[in-house]
Length: 269
Image (cartoon, rainbow, N blue to C red; front, top):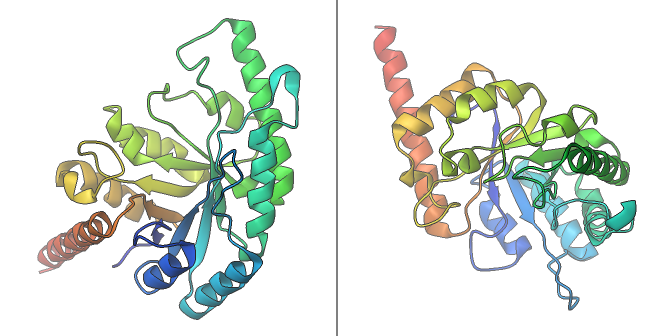
């Protein structure tokens, strides 16, 4: 497909672990988003050293890159504690995946308690705390620009702006979240694009993170047109979790390319 960006999807398309998924996807996409998690009982899906070596081998032989989704929304602890679990787990994930030289670490900011509003003091405390959390994790990652801060559903559109304006992070624009909340993604995307490294895109059916086949061409095509017109060179991740959703999303993108190529041919005749 003729896109200026790297096309990716998640590490959970087939019902198997990360490495088999990477091998399955290696000749189908340009980037794999490693979706990593860790739970309190110690179980996790962090790849071993051997798996990291295998992933590097797959990447080298197929020109594949990786993005990594951090497991918890970043925040400082109460009273400004810099040893909050989200920061500890972020460091563990970054240390584990460093040898993959990820294109970006995608992460959320934890603002649930004030996303619907707060006092001026509460908002300033949250912003200062979030800035410090990003600075800390940026140091872990080898530079704040490696962090791609994602917009979340059911949050105000400009919620993260005062924070990211004070830290040299990158952005992850989740178009699916914007659709889910009923927003036109084009103005948001246009404004954010100069700092955007990663775009997440997915359809909405009984829930989000479904196939792009659920998105009308009237909604999807203008987004893709914008990315092509602006020559976006980052990663666009089809953020779905299953073979059918992935395959039908890829078919939807292929149909877009065919339609646009036909229209281009007609204009040049």
